Image (cartoon, rainbow, N blue to C red; front, side):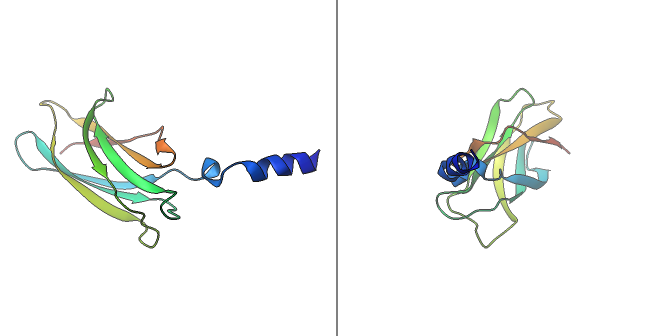
Length: 118
């Protein structure tokens, strides 16, 4: 029975057991009346083109997407790393947003990081 279990585990693709990207820090700075610049620091055990953190997005508190930062390449030797997204339009009266990270091949994380806007 143990041999069968070991065989099944060996057949599961490695990405199925991979870690999700972790948002370590977010800085939001107002750049206009209704726009912000978001700088997001992510840590992820990128292994190459088949498994890497490939983006993050800004969501309102209802889950509506306000902006997306696509990450075009792995950051195997640059951990953690910070990337920014400018001119994100935030609806008037909004005091909080969510940041959600994504990796290839896992997709969007289930969890988000809540950010209080200055």
